[in-house]
Structure formats: structure tokens, C-alpha cells
Image 1 (cartoon, rainbow, N blue to C red):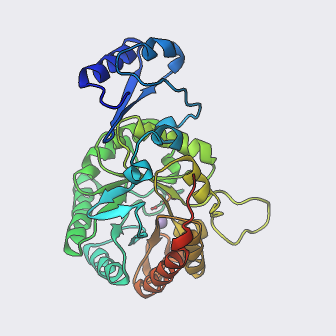
Image 2 (image 1 turned 135 degrees about the vertical axis):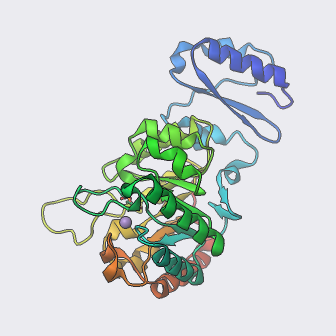
Length: 353
Ligand code: PEP
Ligand code: MN
């Protein structure tokens, strides 16, 4: 819209879009309003919109993820800054890296509080912990949430309480649509796990809560698919999306010596496409604790806005993912090194566009 277009003019454009069975994404900047069309835009002729009062220009954006694309959002004077995700006073995608840490899985109140205290001391900003675990085998521990609604509420309340006690916003995975309302009562960030990246109903439902969404790339997804599915979240009017690279399937027949292959090229590549922050999860990518330090530093060098790392005071006793968890002391070493990498690179910050 032209600078100074009236609300009535904006509404007229929105109505015209809706008349064609499409949805409108209205973003209001300080000086300008940009309206995106959600749906099959072939249903509408650009001239039909271009002739309406207050319209400056009509542009066609060819990517399947236009709402989160740089191309769409560059029309805002504020540029990339508007896509930093702010939670509990921390800016993910701002100047400072943000560290999320905690156990793979919440096992008891004591376990969680002990780990929360440790990761806070190590310099973490956000507390993670799984309540509903995605597992490859039905015979393995599924997270405390699997024991029933009361147990799920209890574990979620420990997470909320530990977050409050140690002043860290919280994140946990929503494994299915049916868990969204429950989990959103307790945590600050809803995590969508790698296995559910393609579940558009889950994405839509999670987005509707208006809370930031930590969105993990499926291990078999291209970057284009990853961004196209992130667009489902944006299409609900929720732009607080934190993208997470966590490794893709390794190639070849022999041993790869890592659980997945961390695709660090995806980090700056995604930043060329979108202003959304990208964080890296070296834990699930490596699958082994002795690689976490190096992969974390590498992720920082690649331009990640933060990291998500699994931590346990005694990894050997963890029910899930013990092999990849590091201790709070190791987390501190890792965070300190990552901060040094980030400050060393700060003048020539790795950024797209
Ligand atoms: C997790 O973060 O707890 C997890 C299961 O990761 P992913 O979805 O990346 O496998
Ligand atoms: Mn895990």
C-alpha cells in the first residue's frame, strides 16, 4: 500500500482478496502496510488489486514461502530486525546468541531442577525438556506425558516452575495436534520436532496459540520444503518462528560415525531466503557427546542465532539420548567458546542478503 493509505483502503483490498476465496496477510510497518495473498493467487488478476485506492504496486513472488521470504519482507523499512523472536527478554535472531539447554526428557522434578540449575549457571537462556517424546520404538520410554493427563500436567508444571525459578523461558515438543492446547498452558515456546515437520494440521494448530514456534527440519527434507512448511505457521499470522537445523540423513552404506549429518551450509543459505532466525541442534545431529563442542563452534561460525543442546548431570543414567548429552560444566565450556567465536566474527557477521 502507499505510505499513508487509510485503514478503509487496506480493508477494501482485504475484502477483494477474500471475495476470491483467498486469505490476506496484513503486515503493518511504521510507514507502510504490506498485504500478502495466501492461497492460489491465480484466482485473482493483479490489475483487480492494482486499481484499488491506496495500492502502490502489486508484485508476484514466486517462492512457495513468500510470507517469510526476504523478497516480501524487504518492503518494510525496518528490514530484518522485525523477525527477531523475543521471548522472556531474549532476542533470538538479535545481536547475541541464545542458548537453549536441558534434558532430552524430563524424568523427575529433582532431575529437571538439578539440570535447570546447571544449565543456567553455564549461561543458557532457555530451558528445554521433553514430556512427549517421539520414539522409533513403542517399547522405549515415551516421556512422562505417555502415562496420562495427570502425569503430563505434573511434568509440564515442573518445567514451568523450573523456568520461573531459574528465570528461563521454556520449550517443549508438541507431538500431535491434540497436545497443543495442553502444552501451550505451560510453556513459552512450542517445539515441532523433525518427525512432524510435514504435519500441516499440527503446524496450523500450534501456530494458532500465538506463541513462538521452534520448528525443526525433517532429516529428509530439503531447505525449500523446510521453508515451505514454515510458511504454514506464518500463514496463521504467527511470524514468531525459530527455524532449527538438526541434521539430515547421512549418505552411503558404511558407518557415518554421526547420528545425522549436520547441514551447516543450510544456515547461511536459509538466511539468504528469509529473515527468520536459525538455531542449530548439534546434539541430535551428532548423537555423541564428544562432538558437541566442535559442532557448536562450527554452527556459530556458520551464523546460527543460537543453539539447542541436551544436558544431563549424569548422562549415563538418562532414559533417552544419554550418548549425546553433555554435563553442565561441558555446556559452560561450549557456550564460552561459542561466545568467543561469535565475537571474533561479529564485525563480518555471517548474514545473507
Ligand atoms: C528433541 O529435540 O527432543 C528431538 C526429539 O529432536 P528431533 O525432533 O530433532 O529429533
Ligand atoms: Mn533427545
